[in-house]
Image (cartoon, rainbow, N blue to C red; front, side, top):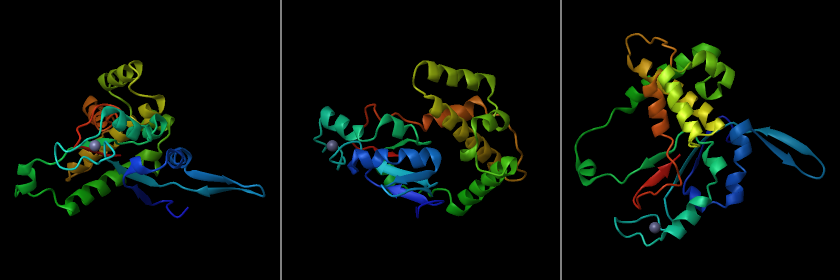
Length: 225
Ligand SMILES: [Zn+2]
């Protein structure tokens, strides 16, 4: 697969056929695609970073207040993205329409070069532990390299008991929290230290970036996963 080791961006995820979307589950989980034909079977590498965006409803929202979609139409649209597939996204973020002041404001965001340096420092930190990035850490490795503070573990236990977090989601949250901690350490700039414990603040931030795709969403919002 040509996308292996690359980034695949799917815009308007809700417009894809459900069967096509479900076909992503195997490569997202195992990093391979298996093709079976009458004469032969083949397994091809397909480890890639999936980035996707979708509107919350078929009409796409449009100008504020213009959405005509009812709850049934919205629910049908979002059902294209199954729970098991949504569970495989590490980050699910609701993007609200920017306020007028934000659009017209002169305040400049952070320079991309600065962000890049911080990300590269965090990647170096992660790769220095086990020779791979946090996304590839196994559950056993997470226990060693991303130990949870007691209160962070309690919050995750509560999420699982209330059925807001699956077993797969639990490990994904831990990897994201590890990365947040690494970015925090990398932001210290002067000396990048590897404080190995994942704190409650890291876990809560990771949970906040794992929004439910089933809950009510403003008509002018947009999902980025
Ligand atoms: Zn609509």
